[in-house]
Image (cartoon, rainbow, N blue to C red):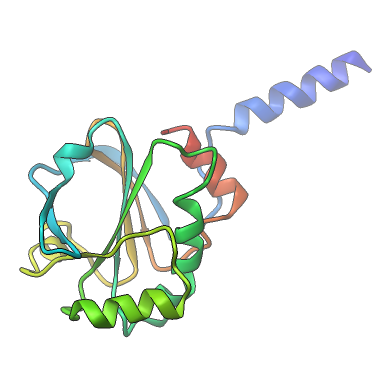
Length: 169
């Protein structure tokens, strides 16, 4: 009986660092460093991603007209306050060229309470990061390197995903 318990415990440990089974999660074989990524906050102040080294970062690109963005944003909001991810910083970046009022209404309609709104006014990030659509989320480790991206919407509160992400926290 002891051997069975030990075996189950050890086999669970060996799978703990495997990526979650999410079809639109792309794990990068080679880590990619993104230097000098900047965008704007809701007050039109520049945010430099380099200032967030030592944090696990998610750059989430969305637009108000995007139905899958609406679908995933509430779970992204909850992820931002997850107790197991205290070192996580999430930047939901609107790339739809919307005015602040339209983006704020989007957040209000979805009852987003924990995230702030960011913008990419000069439209350089989608090209610089080779985005192919929205929503797209880029996961960046504490060294400022992209280690994964999510193309399309997911449930950010998925336990398997949260447990895997906590390995990078």
